[in-house]
Image 1: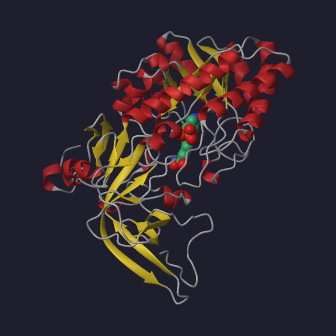
Image 2: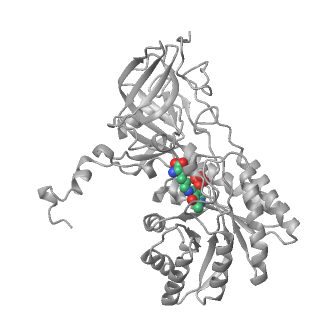
Image 3: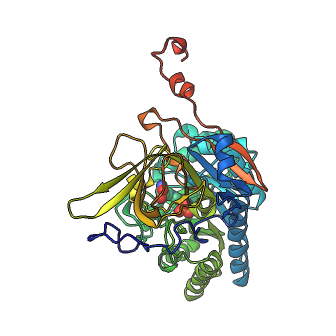
Length: 470
Ligand code: LLP
C-alpha cells in the first residue's frame, strides 16, 4: 500500500513506483540486475561482494558500458557523417571523469581525448594516449601548460582568447613546430539546461564573439607557428534534443563561410553536452538519432551557404561515462521527519555525500536510488538520501521513493554517477575521497585508489612527521 499523507512533499514529476526495487533500464548500466539473493549486480559482481572487497562509499564503473557508449558515439557520428560525404571525430571530454584506465578504454574504442588542464593532460599521457589524439581546452591555459602541450606534440589547442594566441606562437617558435589550433566561439545559443551548465549564452567566460574570432583567425593565419584548422563551439551540458545544436551550428557555419575567404577550413567542432537520464522521467534522445539529426542540420546549413561540409568533431563526456557509474553507500541512520502539515519525509543518511557527489548541492541535480544489498519489502516511502557532511544542503538524492523498511546497514546504490561526481569531489569535512573500481565480466579492480586518513594528514605541514616535507 502506498502512503498518502494529507500533504505530499513529493515533487510533481516524481512517480510512485509500482515496485520500489525495480531498476529503470534508462538509468542503470545494461548489466545491472538483481541477483538470486536480490542484491544489485553490476558487470557481473554483486554489490555485497563489491563492498566487502572495497568498502563504502564506492564508485563502481561498468567497463563494458563505457566501451559500448564510446563505440556508439563513434559509430553513430561516423555513419551520419559518411551519409553526408564527410567524416567525424569523437573526443572523450575527460573532465567528466578521467583515469588512465578510462583513457585507455575510450582510445581503444577509437575516440580521441579532450583535456582542459595540465593534470588531465598528464593523466592522458600517462595512459599512453598518442599526443596527436589530444585536444587541449580551457579559458586560462598558462604559459607553462601551453609550453608543455606544444612540446609533447598535442594534436590541437582550442584557442579561447586573443592572449593565448601569442602564447602559442611563442611556444611553437621555441619548439620549432607548427601547432594546429581551433578557435572557440560563443554562438549565443542558450541551451536549455541549468544556468551554470550553459556555456554559449552571451555574458559568460568561454569563447570569443564572432567579431573577435575573425580578428583572431586572421592573426593565427599570419603567424608562422600556427595552423588554423577550424571553429569550435560548445553550447552547454546535459542538453536534451537537437534544437540547440542545430541553431548553434547554423550560426557558426555562417562565420565558417566568411572565414573561407582567407583559406580552407577542414574542421568544425560542435562540442559535447549530450544529456543522460538521471531519473526514470528523463528521456534523452538516443545517440544514433542525435548524430543523424545534428549532422543533417550541418549538411543542410552548408548546402544553404553553398559550401562543402567540413570534417566534424564532437566532445561527449557525460553521455559516455555517466550512465556507467553507480555509487554504493551504506545507510547509517534513518529518520522520519514529520511536519506540522502532516506531511512526512524519510531521511536516509549515507556514509558519503557532497564530498563524492556535489551535483545536487551545486545544480539542484536530481538522482534516483535503490536498495542494493537486498530488495525492500515495504511499500514505497518518500525519501531523501542525505550525506554525512555538516551542511543541510548535503543532499545525494533529493526525492525518491524507497521501500519504507530501509534501515541502517543496508547498502544503497545511486546510478548515473559516473560523470562529474569523482571529478568534482572534495575533502570537505576531511572526508577521504572514495575509490573507483571497474567491473567487467564478473571481476572488479581498483582503477583509482581511495584516499586514506593518512593521505589527508600527509598534506598538513603542521604534523611533525610531515614537517619539512616541502
Ligand atoms: N567540450 C567542452 C568544451 C566542454 O566544456 C564540456 C563540458 C564538454 C565538451 C563535455 O560536456 P558533456 O558532454 O560532458 O556534457 N560539472 C557540470 C558539467 C560541466 C561541463 C563542463 N564542460 C555537471 O556536473 O553537470
